Length: 191
Image 1 (tube, helix red, strand yellow):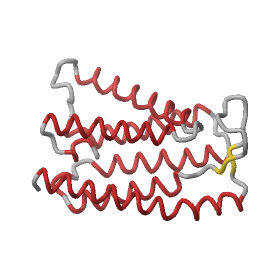
Image 2 (cartoon, helix red, strand yellow; image 1 turned 90 degrees about the horizontal axis):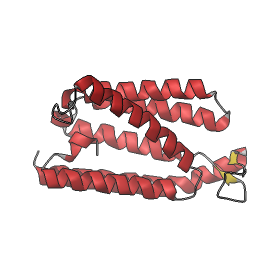
Image 3 (cartoon, rainbow, N blue to C red; image 1 turned 90 degrees about the vertical axis):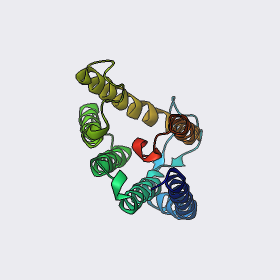
Image 4 (tube, one colour; image 1 turned 60 degrees about the horizontal axis):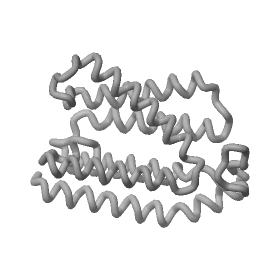
């Protein structure tokens, strides 16, 4: 698959995900309101009124579904993607359960570490990323620690309206720019 075809497939997948999310979020919000699933304001909240929580119930399946379709369409780039998808799905399920009932920190960290482990296992064919500048064990350890830290940072910011969406777009644009400047396939980054 050419770089142009890959970019077009990626943009098409992103557009489909955006349309699915745009179409289904209003329905999900109604359901969450009916079921009384709200984030109640506290001293750390940026909102003053109870706000429905659970937008990931639409976003995560749409994104994971797009990943599956995109990588089945381009099987030569599918190396290791399914452990990454499994890790993301596991993390989403536990995050939803944590939204419903506050899970103990140890349970959340264990699942986060497991999800990151699955993703790193799936990424193994593309490692090392730093071309041997540091030993592979150090690189993997730093990646794992940074990834778990990022999951928690992202979760913390999720309570601030709009900031996680802005962060996600910024990260995706940044990774896409790096990939374009380096001449790498966007699929190498799971984009």
